[in-house]
Amino acid sequence: MRIGIISDTHGSLFYFKKALNTLGGCDYIIHGGDVLYHGPRNPLPEGYSPKELAEKINGMKNIIIARGNCDADVDQMVLQHPIQSPYVFLQLGGLKILVSHGYTRDKKEYIKMARDYGADLFIYGHTHVKELNQDENLIVLNPGSTALPKDGIHSVAVIDDGNIQLINMENQEVIKELVVK
Image (cartoon, rainbow, N blue to C red; front, top):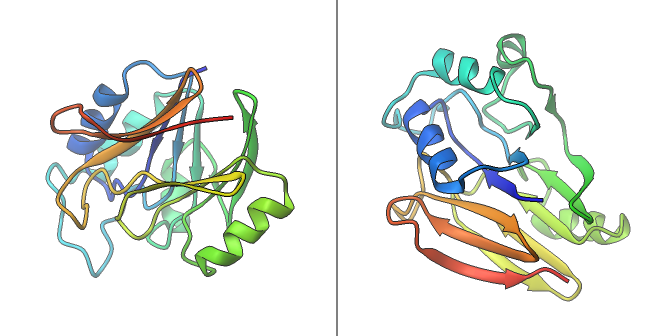
C-alpha cells in the first residue's frame, strides 16, 4: 500500500497538484490540516484558489484530513470529505497512525498519546518544518508545508514498501528516509 502524506496546502491548487505529481499514484492521501485558507499570518501562496482546490479534493477518493488551525466550519461545508478534529487514529498498510495538525497540544503530549494508543507513526503539520525521526518505537513525521515551507523547500512524504521518505517537490529528491518496522 502506498500512502501519500501532505500538510499545510493553505488553498494552493498549484502546490497541491505538484504534491500529487510528486507522490505518484497513492492508495491513500493523509492531509495534516490547513487545507483551504491561507490564514491571517501567512502570505497568499502561489496558485491560491481554495474553491478549485476544494473541487479537486472532492473528486478524490481515500483522502483523510485532520483539522488545522486555519480550517473552519465553512471549509467543511465545501469539502465532501470529513475534516477530523482534534486528531485521527487509523490503521493503514499494517501501521497504526495518529494524525493531528498539532496546534492544540504540545508535541510531547501527542507523542505520549501516540504511544498510549500503540501507534507506529505520529503525523503532524502546523509548523511548516519537515521532520522524520525515530523516537524509540514511534516514528514522528511532519511532511513540511506543500505551499509555504519555512525553509523554502516544498515537500511531501510517502510510505511505500516498508519505507517512509520525505521528498523535495521541486526536484523529486529524497530528503530523508526511514525503514518502517
